[in-house]
Amino acid sequence: MAALSDEIRYSRRHPLIQRPTITHRPMPIPIQLPDIPEAERTPLVEQLLSLIEALMEANQRQAEQIQQLRDEIAILKGEKARPVFKPSGMEGSGQGAGGGEEGGEEKPRRAGSSKRAKTQELIIHEDCPIAPREEVPATARFKGYRDFIVQDLHIGAHNTRYRLEVWQTPEGEWLCGELPATVQGSHFGAGLRAYVLYQYHQCHVTQPLLREQLLEWGIDISVGQIDALLSGRNDVFFAEKDQLLEVGLEVSSYVTVDDSGARHQGRNGYVTHIGNDFFAWFSSSESKSRINFRRLLQAGEPFYSLNDEALAYWRAQGLPQAMCRALMAPPILELTTTTAWEAHLQTLGITQERHQRIATEGALLGGVLAKGLSRELVIVSDGAGQFAILLHALCWVHAERRIHTLIPLNERHRQDQQRVRAQLWALYADLKAYRCDPDPDAIAGLRARFKALFTQKTSWATLNALLKRLKAHQQELLLVLLRPDIPLHTNGSENDIRSYVKWRKISGGTRSDLGRRCRDTFASLKKTCRKLGISFWDYLNDRIGQVGAIPPLPEIVRQRALAAKGVP
Image (cartoon, rainbow, N blue to C red; front, side, top):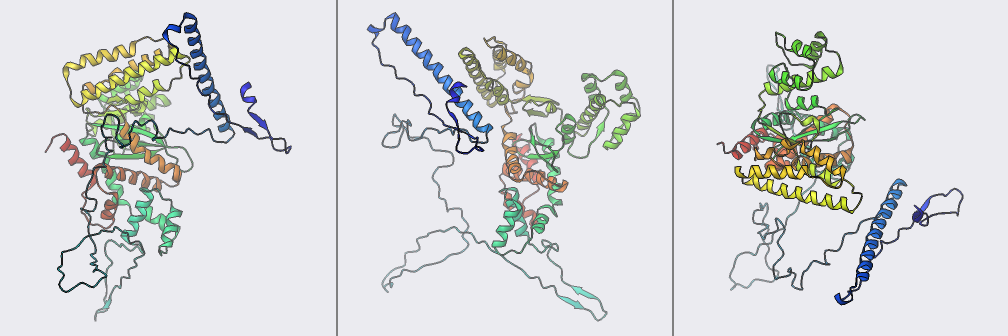
């Protein structure tokens, strides 16, 4: 810290100003050693070169540590750390004057950059023939048109007045015209409601900005009316989202799961994601416990079943035998409400919190299986304990991340860390190749490599302990050898939940249970539409306008999943 004391100078212009100013010095420039011919490399020169290299390396490490301490001090004071400037892409690219790479090979195109007729598939809404400014001679011959297509967008208010005819019959009966079904008595049309939902849930535009935008376009709307458009008349969306998980679990061979924070009514809560390549489903709650996850897997009202699966779980978790016998005593019950289940536990004298928790977890697990969830469903997670249920697989990326985040204490530790990470990624690449082309003869070799990797001894005790812990999860990490259909990571859940986190950063938490339900519903539907290749804008217009051109999303998920399995 002595080096830092020279960098911190307090302003003495005013007695009340005691804020230090940090002067950042550039990182030291490495010394360029001259080339020494072999004839002049005496043993003394070799020793001096080794000493200089060691000093340079120590100097570089100290400079990095000093910069980290400076950044930490700046952050603690509310300032910004020193920015990291990436090298320019123009330098060191190895490109010649022709723009190609060395060796005469062209740089590969980025995905989606192939040449195509960009206006070929556009729908033309209006044709505007334009004659030449000059007078066309009578002897000229017409040779057709040279097309020039312009894409534009028409944005503005469109107000419709429905004039409902009112008649009175001679008998005194009144007859009146009826509004279209898409209006449903609202003074805001289906297109406006779809736009508000799209902007809020897809583009993360806040309600105040939405109102400001609509007012500038000539729409007379209040904050309360925008809130009503976002949260009202969403029963059709709620029903479709509720069916999404039930169908997804029914037709899927695996799901990836993840959770994140989600504040509600000023308190910290959690959101859980369940999905795969065909659907995404979100649900927020106050807990992320095993009980909560088992309730979510039931895709509906909680169901408590006292069966053999529940009994096996109780015994594995160490529930006293007397309680197990009491729970399984005839008549064996199946309860459908949390209140009835808690009353049943009180009747049996199971009052301790730990015993109640284990009993509830087992009963919910029995209910999950009793509802028809396949025992062959694989749940791929990052290793959180609440997801360890049924066939459980672990994410290799999260396993490697634990090794990567270790801080080595010396160069030997750093070399051990790099070597282990290289071995892990090599094994990961071979597992990916096996997943694409399963070969039963390769299983024994992959298992042997796994054992050699996670049982090796390095010079770093912390790394050895971590490898030992990962070795204990061999079954979850190598489940892909028995089930090549499952992924090796949870990147799908990570990507799906990222937009949810972005929404949380912009809008904070929810204040009502209806608002939380709307947030989970439209996040699920939006992500599912993207996975299925359906425009979320078209989907909203189809549902709100009652067009019926897009089938229910659960049915599309069922068709896609069965088609991927080869089931007609």
